[in-house]
Image 1 (spheres, rainbow, N blue to C red):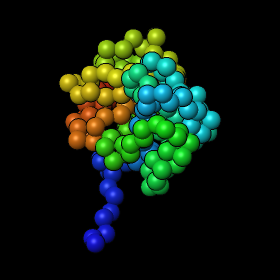
Image 2 (cartoon, rainbow, N blue to C red):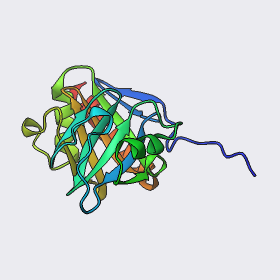
Image 3 (cartoon, rainbow, N blue to C red):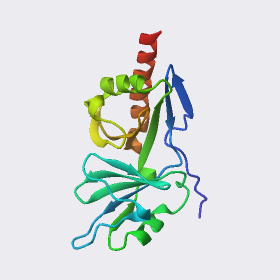
Image 4 (cartoon, rainbow, N blue to C red):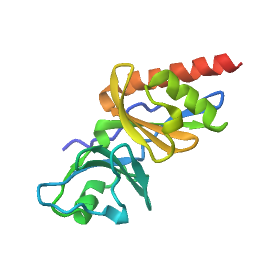
Length: 185
């Protein structure tokens, strides 16, 4: 059998534009979790699963609500491991599906507080930054691409999109960050 070598969707590293930094999070493992009929909602790895519009983080894992009785579970630094098998063990009776290779996660971090990040979000997505604080997550349309936006903290946002649109998603974020940098300069 051929030895397959995993590749990042973008392989761009980290790029800064003024106060904003963009980078692909290649170490993030993703798995979808869905309740089956009659299944009790689990607390995988001690994590209480969030409700609509929310994202919660625990010890090395996080979850965002993706639909009724459905979540995306994240595990930082575990993309090379069989995270799905671990999740299946702690969420018995649930449907768990590997998602790591199907998505790209782009982290956008502001080195100057919330203002640059809020300015970027207001240009790209129909989200009121004032009501979209840490712990919030939503599915949105970004330049005709369907993505999840997760507010991880005051100065950082993650954008999750299908791997097939990785370059287009990166281009949209990069172009907006460049324009904001030029506007400030």
